[in-house]
Image (tube, rainbow, N blue to C red; front, side):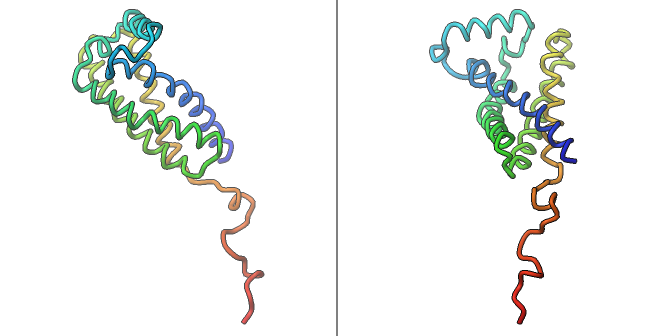
Length: 168
């Protein structure tokens, strides 16, 4: 089980690291005044929209704006917390991964329904968005995995042992 957790954590760490960059640098441009961002980031966002055909970022429908606020205010901080929790082997990783995974999967289900239902999405755009559904599932599964502590792995129990208790 420990190897599986290490594999999950490795994949999630790389995904979280990449995902930690996009919301404050790219998605926030659709929510905040453009004067807050350097020209190079604005040009990068425009190039992305042009090359991918991302009509959601180009047109910013109201539901998408709401999901961007969710990403910026909930998912992005959880991404940063999860990076730290994996790096420092924190016990609360399960909780933050579960919250992040369910939130991401729910948001991506709405976006996937729009992309597929509208029939406006190119193959490139689907390939950019749909892997985040998998990331949501992976993070949720990591949050649901049993906790594996060093004490239980070595056979030590939590609390005093019978041999260490005072005899009355």
